[in-house]
Length: 425
Length: 53
Image 1 (cartoon, rainbow over the protein chains, first blue to last red):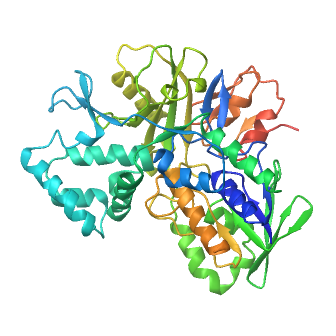
Image 2 (cartoon, rainbow over the protein chains, first blue to last red; image 1 turned 45 degrees about the vertical axis):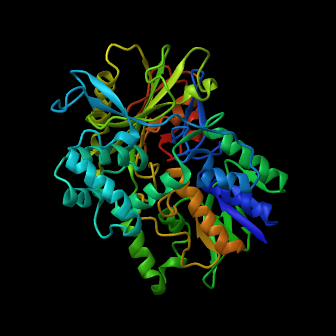
Image 3 (cartoon, helix red, strand yellow; image 1 turned 180 degrees about the horizontal axis):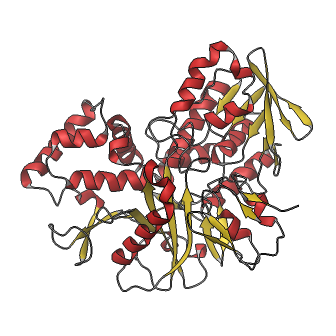
């Protein structure tokens, strides 16, 4: 079976590795000169920054992505990070960190609550595992259960960090699926060598299985005949295939076969595409001589104005920074209405970092923002429309077609696994 | 070099600029250090860098 993969991002390469392993003849076309999409390293003044992701796998060495990598025999070492922590103001009535702060373990998130609310949470932990809440946003659900706004703040910080969404935009079903995954697979891990180590390992698998990867090769059209994908056009060349996998998200994929999709029978699909909302975010990369956090676990910052969380991956892999330096990265969610004023959002983020690390010395290496056509997620978590398209033998993978309950790249891996099951069986 | 409205500010271009001639804050900005080699444009994921002919 001849297969063409459009886009050499994580989803495309996971698919190519799995299919080539299963004996498919795989050819990957990537528009850019580099592979890995928003999941690879870029060298910046000796620091291994990333094109997107923060060098972390949300469920570490036991999660869906790590499992997938193991299955395709991609050789990556993933080290579990320290446990996440939450930064609280010193006194409960303080609105921010300006008068000091204290850090508590992620598992102690109920600490700021009253005894009554803590008891209620303990009961909900048990009851919701059997009867999952449904039908509302996470924020609405929290507010129907509790009066204390701390839980909304905490949820916003967690959702902002992991999904680049606010808790009012996350379906309660999605978050409970994520909580279940946290029980099952544990917390984050860091791939040694950063995101690029994953990409390199997948490419090695693809090449070993006889697959090919073309860079600077832009697919301009997906060929469709009688409702079936039959190949692609790259430059002046036509490449025929039995199967086409697109890593571009549903909307951009549809643009490549817009003529075929003009038929009436596809109207529902086209309408659905218009409802898809990418999620936006800002990453601020800091360099420091002395560690700013001091451990490899995520630091959630619910009392910062914009920054949702920060990690310091050099505690797991010191080679992600020049000798003696640390790489610290913050992430902040950007609301759709604030995308037009990104500079203000960035300034707020920079101010937050000053409050989170008062009196500490660091250098802002690079500020990276993601939205619209190069977003955090092409489909906001919980709204992914699956891997299938109305065109037969045309599948979509990647962050526009994540699996349920999968945070970021874990969702990408779950989505690819689901697509591969449909294709290979 | 001209940065068009496609730019999201991802900063990918600046890491490939040998002249350190691109500043990024919400959007990329070309500085006077630019020698118009055009390398950055290949690396832009959203076709936001236009190279003068």
